[in-house]
Length: 72
Image 1 (cartoon, rainbow, N blue to C red):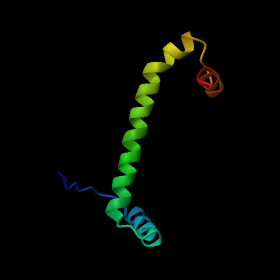
Image 2 (cartoon, helix red, strand yellow):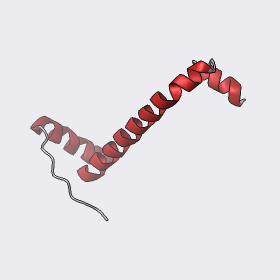
Image 3 (tube, helix red, strand yellow):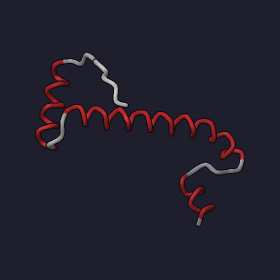
Image 4 (cartoon, rainbow, N blue to C red):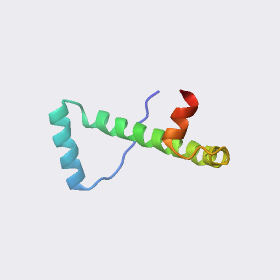
């Protein structure tokens, strides 16, 4: 089910969204919805990373290279 959410944004931000909307040929609502999805996904990722980080550090996994070595 879709819900309606009303927000207030500065005029300048609205103008920028409208410009992007024209360039990408997407409705402003799609742009905002996609941006919110990305924000929520990134926030979830950061929460998970913060939970796992102490365990990884305890195993000596400190960099992306360490991860790649383990999975290669």
